[in-house]
Length: 345
Image 1 (spheres, helix red, strand yellow):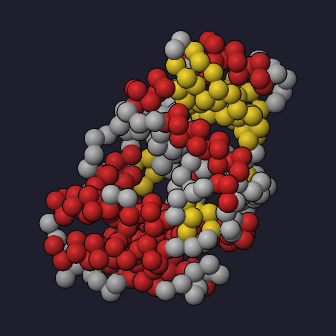
Image 2 (image 1 turned 90 degrees about the horizontal axis):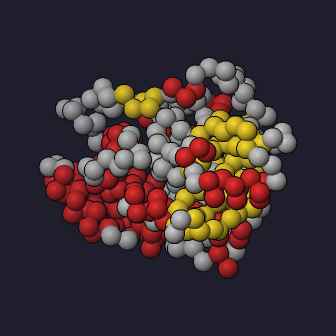
Image 3 (image 1 turned 90 degrees about the vertical axis):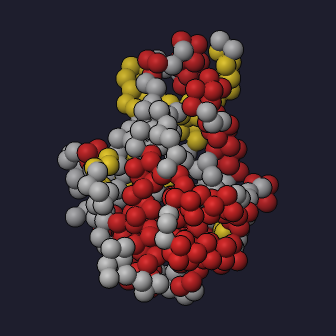
């Protein structure tokens, strides 16, 4: 199977299942504004900056935020990909989404060019009807997310790309000013662990998670820019087999193998032998197994509390995805620790 295979099959219908049998879509997870939903003033500004009227659009259904994210077809024959958010979105959804887009712009302008991200072409900051807008325009990439369940050759392409980028992203540009992974993971750790204790009655297992999570920072430190939000829905594979990584909102500085393990979570949930991959991959072959266990534990400290929060209007499947990742992460961690899977005796 080559990288372009399955391109005409219904990839947008890919799904996973919780242990309860609940079906969770993986390519139709976001409720976003369409081009026609943007204010007239914003649309005019985009067309002026693009240098051509918009004659068609396609809204991205992947991801877990409700910001505008669409391919725009221009009258001059070009295609661009545009993301936009405003202070009105921030108020509606209860978090500073527009500031996250501004941070993505700041980071992309300071990161090395060849980080696997579609090139940022231009940006706009404007005010419309009393609301501040941020608009980011990227080169359009003719690509699609990896198929789920993962196909081995597509996974190999992605893992190879992560390895290639490790050198490019080490060390980070000093002017970038990123958080250290330890500061990121330690932030509100005690509160997260308190919620895990309140939501999971297995005292021994919760103590194991807490012990490993507290050890995570010393194991995960490094000098590489880590995407830190690298899931399959933030990956595109082009028709030519080139791999792209999108949504650079939350990078931190840490160990170069962290993104690799985060990608492999979904692959393990799809039934692939990811421990065999870790044992041979150049980024993880010499990593202390306890370090990977600590990362899985600290991820559980995010998944378990998050899956119990209210379902946000703009992301109706977010909690189900967090529950799926919690199940997968726990199963993998228990396996690595030599513990029976939940329900086994």
